Amino acid sequence: MTARREPVRNLADADRAAARFAGHWGLHVGEVMRFSNGFWAQLLVSSGKGATEVLVDPGSSRVRLEFGPAMMWNTAYGMMPAGTRLGAAKIDSGQAVRIVGMLSVNAATGAVRYHSWHGRFLQIQKHGSST
Image 1: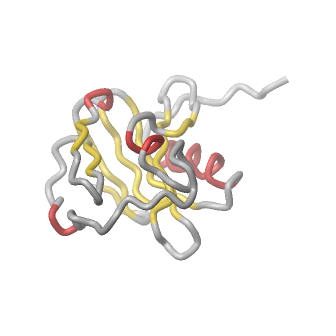
Image 2 (image 1 turned 180 degrees about the vertical axis):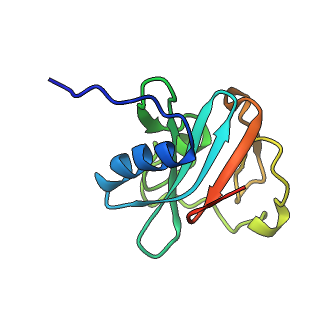
């Protein structure tokens, strides 16, 4: 019998739910964001490099890999075969500086996908602080 989990009400709850999920893969949580439709969390490898992204459902506490680019472009944790070469990065993290929502940019091709399913951006937590 699976234990019923409490609803996710804030960034700390979302961080804990994502950490339980991340632990199964030997990962840890980086940033956590709150949107009007739920929570998003970044999962990192031990060196601090990004591994993948997950969604946390606020009602059920269910955590799952984020659909879209996190599944399609991720060569380690997504659907793209290991060893796939995407080419040299055309976009760097310094070019994305304002949070108004969520989007993914394929570093090799520059392709952009807006994540409309998140809703409006509300809040972010970075390494134990929140804004």
